[in-house]
Image (cartoon, rainbow, N blue to C red):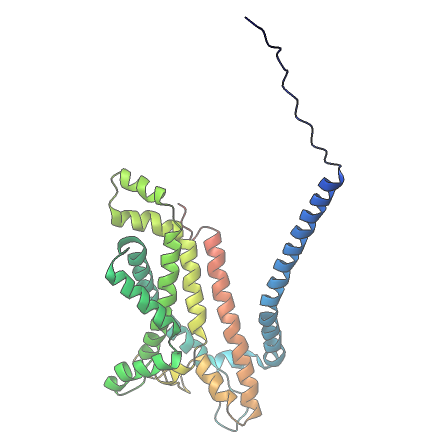
Length: 305
């Protein structure tokens, strides 16, 4: 038997991190990282700059007109100084509450159906297509439609009609957001609940919705912010009111409507109040959205138990 010499394995050569090639590669990757990070920061400033500019300009033009009378008095007659928008602030709150109570449950229910029960079904595709189409319909068209379907049969404008048209505008955004957020919930979580014998409907309510609730809440706030400043559909439904109105079947004032009336008027006093109303409207939207996000992040509305 012939014996062959055993060749010892060659040891891998240690990597020289101080070589010219390695130092060049490290510098290139660091430069690319800083460049992309700088682009991200620049894009953030580009997005925030218009919002900051609008907010600062509203503060500059409208802050001087804010006083106690603005929040406690109704609009003054033409030609008289003073007055406020107390009835418009209250009216906007009424209309937005009505819209949220009608639009958010419908939108969430539709999103749950699309994500949990209607996958691959013809009805689900029709609902998804309808939501996408409604999301692109101009608001004034929706206002005219509700005017024909609700206002004309009642033969008068009303806060209820204004709430209905804003609720319809909220539904597509809430529906699509709910569907997308539920789609991000891992299937393993659902399968674990179903494996324990939990019915599917209970799994959707207790597991899927609770897990995706922060994203769903964000979608609801986006829909709320979108409709809060709408004026065109309210011209055909709520119409506006110069006095206090607490009935849902009567015309009611709203901040966007009052701002529109004051902005197109020839009076400088009304222009000043229009700037103040615009500032109040923006602050109301920002405060409401911020409070909901804070509560959601602290767990008050979060999905975790």
